[in-house]
Image (cartoon, rainbow, N blue to C red):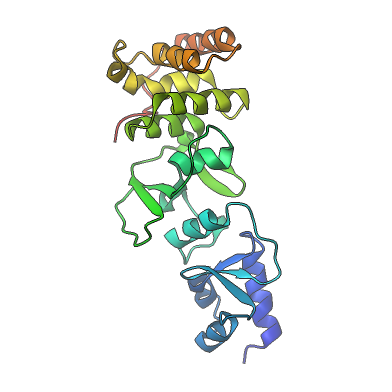
Length: 243
């Protein structure tokens, strides 16, 4: 028979690796009996409900972006956070910008990108179906999220306000989250839509810098051009390609 102390130890082992959170599927996978799960998830018990099937171990400090983390765990509830692969869901779009602390777009929904279509009944969750290459995501605060250059491209595909996207670009470069050259690559597929020469990511990047008016614009443009010069003879990486 599983003792109460050993059950709590199992739960603690799981929760301490993912911000004090645990899913019902993880509890079942760990061999916790259903009756014990029901008792421990009852109101006022050891596990506090955060979202459907996601609980926080009582007494643990609430992590930042708690609701977003819980929604991410729901994407693959049977897979612990430390075993997740990017194809099981990457934080993206406005949500990724919020994690990085770049731009001013409100993250009023939890946004994720997955490679295959899936459904969600949550009105506050938006699932985007696109592939994310290895070089297009980073790990930050324990979450996989699209890197800022990919965030900017994704937001432009979603027809977000160009000035808002420009602010994300500038904030990311200023904070060393990403590089001018990488943005030039990711913005290239969008250039023609703004009346610029087709695939001219440098021109679109320059226009974005003008919209924000950062004093480091000249230095960043030089870095972007040097990047393009170094990579012009290489095959296209696919960064920022369309849906």
